[in-house]
Amino acid sequence: SQTIHQWPATLVQPVGSPLSLECTVEGTSNPNLYWYRQAAGRGLQLLFYSVGIGQISSEVPQNLSASRPQDRQFILSSKKLLLSDSGFYLCAWSTGTGSYEQYFGPGTRLTVT
Amino acid sequence: SQQGEEDPQALSIQEGENATMNCSYKTSINNLQWYRQNSGRGLVHLILIRSNEREKHSGRLRVTLDTSKKSSSLLITASRAADTASYFCATDNTGGFKTIFGAGTRLFVKA
Image (cartoon, rainbow over all chains, first blue to last red):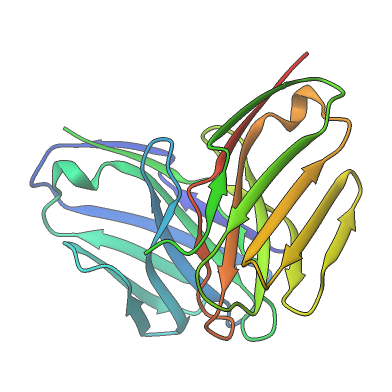
């Protein structure tokens, strides 16, 4: 069976510090991978998606970046965090074309102070 | 930009009652999905309805889709306290690579 992992679960970082959130998927090959951000009590904002290794599409211009160094690994990064980067970050995967259901990780709660 | 918008934003009902949530969207879609999110957790897929379908059932869930009105509804029958969660509609119109989520309906079921 497939599983998706995210870490850390919670993170408190000062403004201007770097960020690295990691997401890994097990039990499937060549998944589509997604990073979302959710503000408190709000919907999901798609940040990045990837259809393959090294292929990243950015949906929202900001100080975040994403990378996919391996087939089932997706990393969200920032060189300098802003207060507005606080939120709940969710990684998700889907099997790709023809299958639209997305499977979500448990999320990372990021607080920038 | 958000494609789907849920209505109401929040809903409070008694256990055993039915809960109905609505979703409206703006552009043509390939499919529409509903997800549930318990507080502080990831989203869980509930049901997908394709653009050529009008109604779909899954257990206590009933989803309808009206493409002429660009709207969908999610009905949860005989609600339980465990149904307390946020419910999101999500649409795809890009051929399967991106799904756009609405802002969600927060459902509270009182025991």
